[in-house]
Image 1 (cartoon, one colour):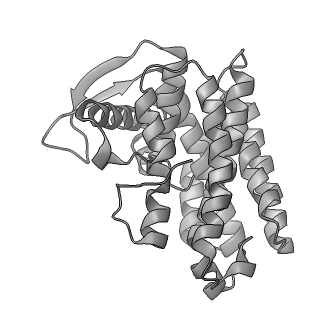
Image 2: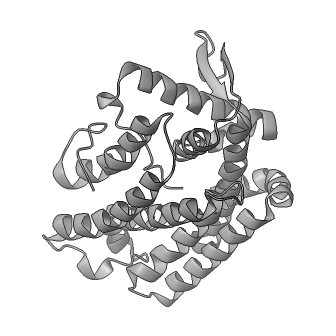
Length: 281
């Protein structure tokens, strides 16, 4: 995804920070276990939130331990992993592979093409195991590509594509929680797309690239305008999040949704220090 689904670590309690890091390390181990060492390079904190969410909802048996890795070769770091870490690892690969293909198609990025070729076999394994989710990602990216080609200045239409994709990624089981998960993920996906558009507006305008907010480039009122738009989307996301029976890591996830998600935006538009995000819904 975009890398915005992160915790505001400076305001976390010590036990929350430890849990956050251990789940992240567990996801990294799942990527290696399921797809090999190279897959670890696709790791991002966005999918760590998915592990926290689904683990809180389904309470799977967790494997815990301490281990070294290429990134931490000397000091062992604690990890927590489960079947839901493996699920998130599969979604991580699907998102990374299709994003690389999209970057190649849109910008003829040679590096993205090389990465896509490296991930192709892993993606085929994901597609065989999770056809619903992969079909949703492919369909959403194709629809988004058409909107970008047409140059449509319609933020809602573009954001809806990302929301539709997230709806299926966040549902690992079609059960009684599926509707609430889909609604939450839809709103979150729309928020993430619009946040990314707001963050990239100046650069996209300078480079002549598509952005649904191009009409607002250089407007001094953008900080307030975009914050109002984003608050509406995130408020809907939090509403559906609160409907889920989440106990474990609930405070940590609220930190990510209500504080961490604003960190990059506040740093860009308000000059705040990264990691302290002070946004709210």
